[in-house]
Structures are given as C-alpha cells and as structure tokens.
Length: 65
Image 1 (cartoon, rainbow, N blue to C red):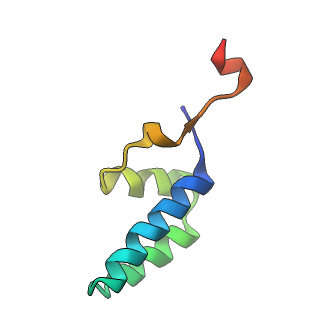
Image 2: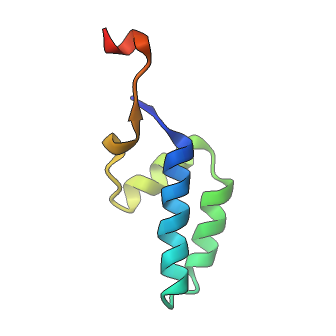
C-alpha cells in the first residue's frame, strides 16, 4: 500500500493542533513528533490514533492494472 504521506502529516498536525487548542497542552509534544516523523513513524502514529489509512492510499498506474 502506498500512502500519501503529505496528506497524512497534514491531518495528524490538524488532529494534534486541535487537541492542543482544546486544553490538552501535552499534545504539543506529539505535534512536534508528527512534524519531524519519518513516513514509517507517521503511519505508526496514525495507526495508534485510529486513523483509517485507506483514506490516504494512492495508486500508481502500475497498481491500477
């Protein structure tokens, strides 16, 4: 499965940014992790937080066949 990492990172930043502004200041550390995470780390963070990774799946022309 190929994941759109940029879209996933944006959504995780939004997720933690919302938590932070909703009174959870510890989300600031998680937000920093997301901003600096490798693609593999982002996928792990997303899974831990219950994100549906199928929403971020992209297909190469080769995979569509």
